[in-house]
Image (tube, rainbow, N blue to C red; front, top):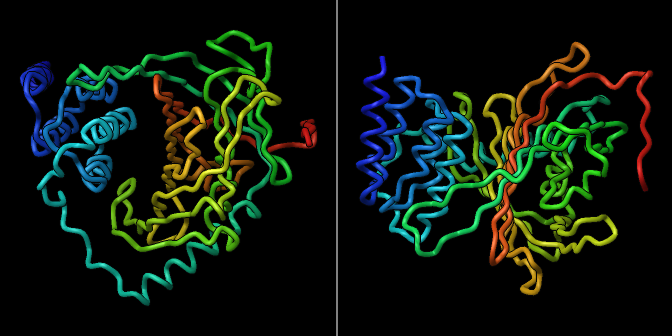
Length: 343
């Protein structure tokens, strides 16, 4: 059945010649989901669009819940970012959300969410896993009407060991070839701290983070509480670093705001998004954002909530960076394993 896909491509080609409404964007994604269009193919076609309107967060969340794959969701976020200066879309939520919880219900849910977040790392076993990191760069074209394509810089394979609540990253391969240098010396943007330190930075009382219930959504088809948060720079422990070697890295402390997504039943944080704020004006990085998705994984016969996928973006005046990280091959850290941590 090639006709539906051909029709989809033709529809996108027509839409790309003009500015596309968010309503048309929604119809395009839904059609692709209905006809089982490959995630990579849909993502590539979405990047050819120019939006006349700015889609809101919930639109992307709901399309993801309906079946849009990770690459298509990333493309939707690109479109959202590129259309940030356009008028907000008038499209109503795709599905009516449940009634908002009362203030008392919001507070009760958040108390459980906060307690689970603060005790998250204490419940983690010692384990080893593999990170597959695809790093991309983008040079914005201010004369182009469409979002320019990301160009893959390289692909890293990293062995991550979690032992005694500490993380150790060992770069094993670059583009499939054995690596001869350390992770932080690989050049470009690197990311660490996906296994609980981000949760602690946001939830520890010393951060004085302000939380506010925002909305319900469906995340992987489960009802989810979404809270906004903001941590001011003067209370933040969030670091942004740039540089090719550990000794030569330039690091600043920035504030951060974003959203936490917590499962309505388990009260466990399933997604964190964050965007840096109050970055010093003389720092090379002008903007930074990230997202971490959690899901259940088996380690030593136990089902544990662990990172599934992460994405980090950085901007400089001349270039943008994007890291897409997939976590897999979780396994128990055994007595036969050996590890040493730098101070």
